Length: 41
Image 1 (cartoon, rainbow, N blue to C red):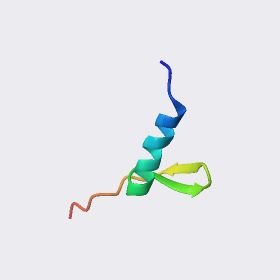
Image 2: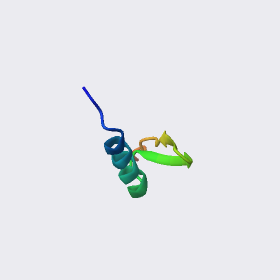
Image 3: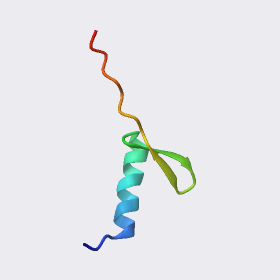
Image 4: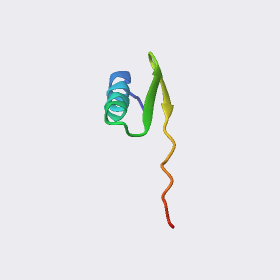
């Protein structure tokens, strides 16, 4: 499988901007967001 770097960066950037899955913690550095815990009470 051959991955296109620009495609991966574009996909991650879209998720960062929408606040889904990733957070930018420094230039070119991302962290995966924790899944919000559901309140079942």
